[in-house]
Image (cartoon, rainbow over all chains, first blue to last red; front, side, top):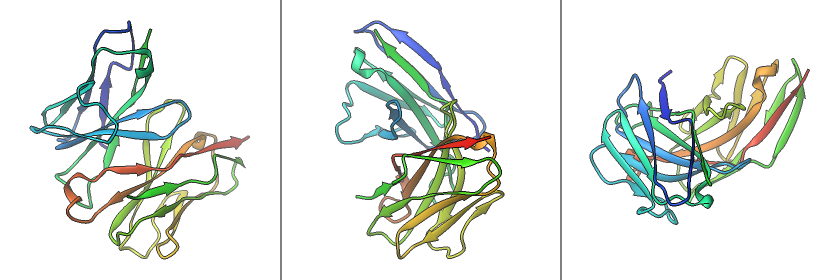
Length: 118
Length: 119
């Protein structure tokens, strides 16, 4: 199957700093990427949907100015957590969908990034 | 809005035995997709199986099969000949396939079932 990578896998930062997480589709073009957040022992919560070349669509309750998403190419989307605080500590997962939409495409998930804000 | 419910927070099964994980969903749509994803301790989400709602035939992938009951809005996962590597968190997920959402479908996940394999 298709491979999605995330970098970094772990990051520890001080409160008030910004952190950028990269999500790449390695062997396919992804017009749409999704960013999820997962708290310990909980399900995945969709934060935003990212389309190449356009603004991301954020889910209700997700601050777009705090979680900046850039989908600059068909293989790369970035999530920047601005002015991070301890409550932003979580596991962030991206997924990428192969194909331009439709029934045959599948979402492939990255390995996740664990963010710890001190 | 669609909802996905997994009523079994934890399940355990003896190695080589069969286990069934439950999932129900609520939707007013007639065209959609259902998925089972596995999340092992590595936290990497892995697609186990998918089902198109318009197909009456239940999907199967080797030891994994589903029992899709559209009228009952039920989508259970059966794992046969359970192996130690099957130990993971299993998430049921729903995705719309209807316009106008067709181009940007998002997955709605259940709360997950933690499966333990007993050697």
